[in-house]
Amino acid sequence: MIVLESIEQTERLAVIIGETAKASDNLVLTGDLGAGKTTLTKGIAKGLGIEQMIKSPTYTIIREYPQGRIPLYHMDVYRVESGAADLGLDEYFEGDGFSVIEWGNLLKEALPVDYLEMLIEKDPTDLDKRLVSFKAFGRQAEALEARILAQWEQDHV
Ligand SMILES: Nc1ncnc2c1ncn2[C@@H]1O[C@H](COP(=O)(O)OP(=O)(O)OP(=O)(O)O)[C@@H](O)[C@H]1O
Ligand SMILES: [Mg+2]
Image (tube, rainbow, N blue to C red; front, top):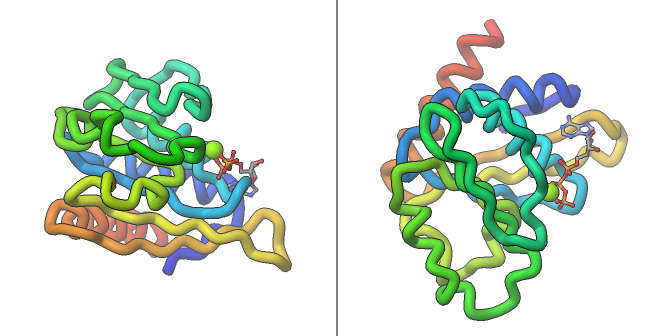
């Protein structure tokens, strides 16, 4: 588990994720309203070298940002109730970009085959603090998690 003491630390972790992500890596962001999923995605975009403003895709489901080292596919599936399998998201998941899916756990059977789940939890006693834990589903996700943690530890010695 990683303890993020401030929004700056969240942004630093996010930049690391953006810098280490590879094509067809998938990151499922899980956490309550206001946990920091969109904040994290903005930092990921920065790590990918995207300068464009990241807007929440809540009503569009997906926004594509092709300007960085690899494309960023930012999805928010909070309002996707059923028929997620019909959305054709697999083309993104297996494509040449990095998919970041807010509320991705709601996709259930339409989840990517291989993905890294990142759980962000608020700390009830400290409004600026977040607790992060990863769970890898698949070999590619394991490799992504290992790269992220290695870089994070290197930054925190
Ligand atoms: N350490 C931290 N990491 C991330 N966000 C933090 C932190 N400390 C405070 N915050 C605040 O928490 C809020 C996170 O909002 P954000 O929109 O990123 O959450 P979200 O998980 O995307 O919410 P939603 O489920 O509504 O989309 C922001 O207002 C941010 O300033
Ligand atoms: Mg959000």
